Image (cartoon, rainbow, N blue to C red; front, side):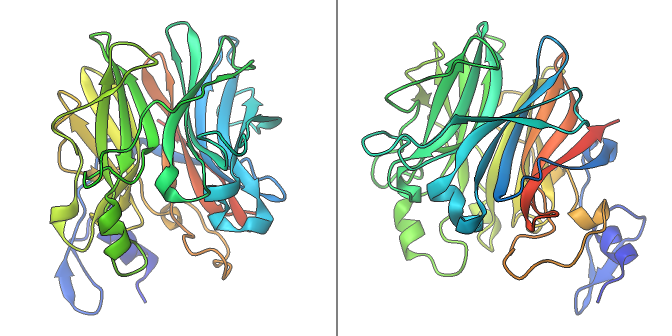
Length: 353
């Protein structure tokens, strides 16, 4: 078994250049500048009886921090996100303070709606003098009807207006994105356009694939002249595609933002380096992205927790990264993480120094 020091060295945390997983091998992962500024704060939104995921933060005009997050009843286990998730709202006096849950704001609407069976992946933004909550819904409790939609409100406290149609449909049969649209991230471009980043994969590949992780997740871009669309998919999609790297390397959970004249992206790693770290990429035009570097380490690099319960299979890693931006600068990283005092999942917060 690797020592903690050797494990961290393999990630580039310590100045060692070699380590071994059964045989001698040199492997030091490239680190982003971003990862060097992360300071762990700890778990937030540990809610008895619920799994918590997808915490998206925003600063209110009064200085309080609002978080929109996914949750579903504990009895449905980790897989409940696909057919029983709802989006709830919480408020804290600061990014690192305890959050008080105010209640559910978006719940599945039932038969006949595009978001009939789940509401998940919240991503909050203030755009054109209104609050915009991008999210994923589905209509059959499965992945093939996942679609990205939007709810809008004049205030972070609502009322929220929902729409009869999603913002972005899946591609035509045979396209790389014909299975779904999900994991939304959004940038209002400096040129005034509305840029929606989304994850998808191909249905045939998904159905024919072998192994625990089926299909190959990639990211695309859709652009509109107006917030409510129509959104036109970029002809060069997919813009992030790791499929040629081998070992079914994929990308998911992207958070995109604009800082210092560049587009930047955080994701969780899904086989590019491993399945435990986060990735960081940059782009001059928001379409062609740099090779990834590490954006955050596995949980054991920051904290010590009890051994994984047998029912949690993704224990010890951070997923669905979302940034709190203040005056255009990232100040805190909010992630999702299995475990916690109820052995379900919660939010985990980092401060950026």
